[in-house]
Amino acid sequence: QVQLVESGGGLVQPGGSLRLSCAASGSIKSIYAMAWYRQAPGKQRELVSEIISGGSTNYADSVKGRFIISRDNAKNTVYLRMNSLKPEDTAVYYCNVVYYDERYRRLGVWGQGTLVTVSS
Image (cartoon, rainbow, N blue to C red):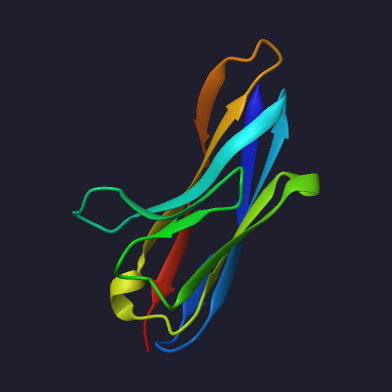
């Protein structure tokens, strides 16, 4: 079993910053990718950013230049630094990890979600 523990969400004013964290634990042989998704009320879940095992990153156009994803391989933890936050960034943010277990099966797991509210 693999579990993800997310933290760092909350209420922030427009223009402010937050940092989300997601720590993976359990039967992990290696991690292929770690990502952040978000889902706003009434909208579909969308990819915000991902970081692949080699270190390459991808960002949604809406967050490029404002958000930074990083990863601590020793801690199996991914971070999302969110700067210049806008009201439209308000959403529940979910961590997703794609990993290989001891049998080298490629599996995925979701975090429970953390709410980010950007409002004055």
